[in-house]
Image 1 (tube, rainbow, N blue to C red):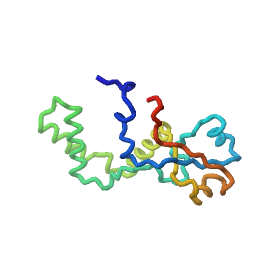
Image 2 (image 1 turned 180 degrees about the vertical axis):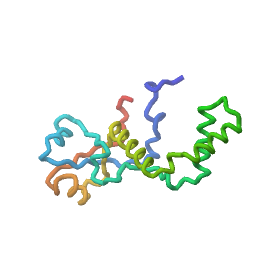
Image 3 (image 1 turned 45 degrees about the vertical axis):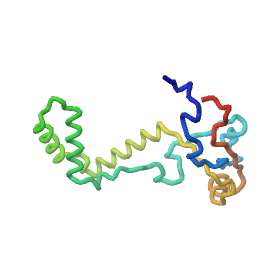
Image 4 (image 1 turned 135 degrees about the vertical axis):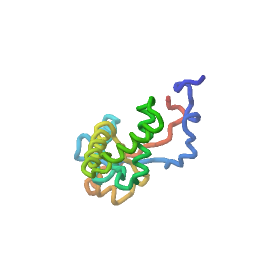
Length: 165
């Protein structure tokens, strides 16, 4: 049996199939001392999604409003099979029918609160490093490096032959 630490990069990922660019770039503002840490301390910042300029970025909303009654009932039926394993088939069907009628999924305000709660949890746990393959992108220089007054740092995305896994 091969453990994770014994695996090589070739066993983990087929790098050639990823078709990665040779270099990826991060645009930074020179006047922000935290942005300079990418050079002075070799640190990158993984932004929480709430800090993104695009308000819908990372908000992959589940469209509960598009679910049919059959799909909602199927969800509750399967939920009953998992949580109520001692139920008979008719009891699973009854459970699904009852929950279809009182389902909070049909309440738009409730689903809005669930989506907001889920996004807040996601935001508190996840950081994202946004990079681009184009070091000369005018939009990126304008938006992310203080109107072309900042700097751009390149990273090599492929693990070298000598990197430890």
